[in-house]
Image 1 (spheres, one colour):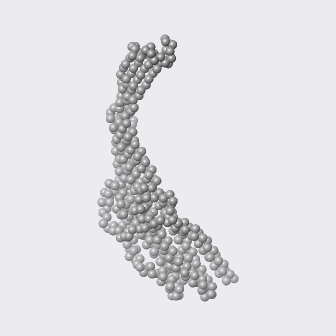
Image 2 (cartoon, one colour):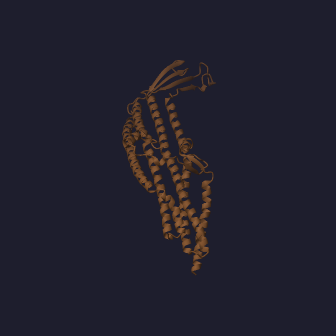
Amino acid sequence: MENKKQILSFLFVMVMLCIYMNIHAQIVPAMREDTIHITLPDAEGQFIQKNFLLLASKYQVSTADAAIIQAKLYPNPDFAIEQGVYNQDTKKWFDLSSTGETALSLQQLIILAGKRNKQIDIAKINSQISRYQFYDLIRTLRYELRSSFYGIYFLRDAIGVYDREIESLKTLIDVYTSQYNKGNIAFKDLARLQALQFSLQNERLDLVKQATEKQLNLGLLTGDTLLRPVTPVMANGFNEIDISKLNYAQLVDSALVNRYDLRTAHSQVELSQSNLALQKALKTPDLLLGANYDKAGNYVRNYNALSLAIDLPFWNRNQGNIRAAQFQIEASKQLQSQAELQVRNDISNAYSQLLETDKLYKTASLQFTSDYEKLLDGITKGYQNHTISLLEFIDYYETYKNSKLELNHLQNNRLDALENLNLATGTTIFK
């Protein structure tokens, strides 16, 4: 009966492994097919040229520029002609002779109080805001791009850790399977090793899924319509970045100058002020200048006249819009103050996180020596030579894996903290 249970347990483990390997065989080729190697500068170049959100934002800038052209245009003159349909005296239809009636009028709107120039100023500020929003979109999407790039790199590195462990464990399981078939070892030892392998494969599969999601996001950001998987190529020396030379005050000053969302807030104040000037100008009515000709319908024949027309601002002097524009200026100033405070908070948060992350990374990297790289081979040989028990072997495996993955995670967090400071300052302090 005990032998039967062992055989059933063994078959269950093998079935589960077969199911996993079938899934793995379907996923991994999909990841590696047409894989391209790409550096961060290449990815950023594709991002600038092909990202659909950036391309759409460029058209928004062009739209705002076109509004400047429109604001500069003068009103078109208005021409009207009036022709009599039927002359009862001459019994003629559309009588164009001297006895028929024809009237002409030409009118031109004359914009007063500098309203046209003020509308041009508003259009220029709106165009400036569109540009600032475009550059701020680049700032935020570039952070997402670089974060995805680093995430893929370190996830692939973590997958490599699992690959090495699984391959080493597979060799050991093959040996133990042979020994079990010969009756030299108990099935429980083989089952524990197989369970450890299955656990590692499951954890690896989770990392593969995360890497795939980040690859899809990177393809979306770079405008890769084929959505090909990528292998990030990292430049050397990213671990040697020295943050001790950073000056907090300079970081804040840099952000106050280079953050385009803050520039947008400044421009919104200017826009509100220009709108107030326009609303005040609108209380002055425009002048309508005209010329009229009437062939036979006035007190004299061939009547010619000039006309002037203007609204009398007795009741409506645009008081409500002027008051609203004044309030809008105050609201814009408050939003500008909020934006400045947000920038300072972003810098403070990013800077403090970078210091803590860098400190933790340096401490961990000093502890993680090359001896850890020899640990996997050592514990495998030790277990094969029966110098350590199965529980010690599994514990060492977990220690090695967790240490490697923790250092990998710290490296990723450190680079993400560096990029977060780039995002907060609006510049590329760390390339």
